[in-house]
Image (tube, rainbow, N blue to C red; front, side, top):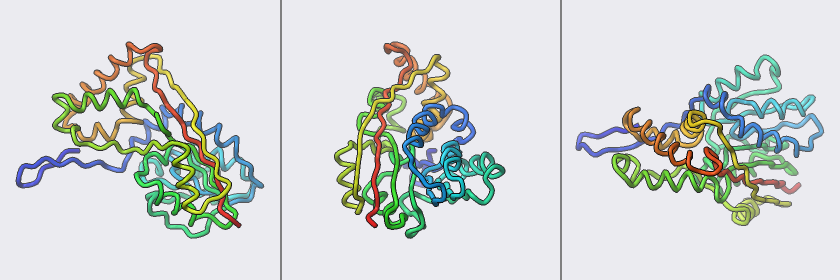
Length: 274
């Protein structure tokens, strides 16, 4: 959103909320990647697990189904996401699942979890050193961290086009100084950060995850609701938002294959010492 003070100086702000209903409906790529991460979980079945950045709870459900008598805390900064997650999971899992609204940079936990699971969330956190220190503190001794997020090179083609449009009229007034809200780190840097936070047995890797859409409408909705919603919040009206998205869709239509997003996923696996 855009505001101004009494001097007339334009200010931009970003909310912390999401269109959770749209995300729940169109986030098939994130669900597919996340299920592959869940497949790598090795659990007894009675653990207490934190789903860090649980979104609408689709992958929280997958983790709960692995825990015959365990407990999962779904954490997200978005109240909209948590509302949908409660609706999706509450009836099926009762007291075995609970939800906490909190920032990943201000985790309210101290040695409470046997494991921490997370997908498609850490790249939204601006300070990974602080993030990993908080995750380390939240784990019990011997606890594990298994996560995946956007990594180095993620969406480079799309974001290069966004940056070019942001420097041009009519968007430069609103997006010219806007800083991207993501951190897309590489495996080596991430490994060093995890080790500095105290983690051991650290493994990190990067994998491509190109994602295609069949139509311009599908591509545009996904880009607007999942990737660029913070950018679109800076634009003052729907006309400009549609103009930006249309320009991106026109460029994507010329790609081969058309309407493909160049996703890269960063995998993290680590433990807290006993």
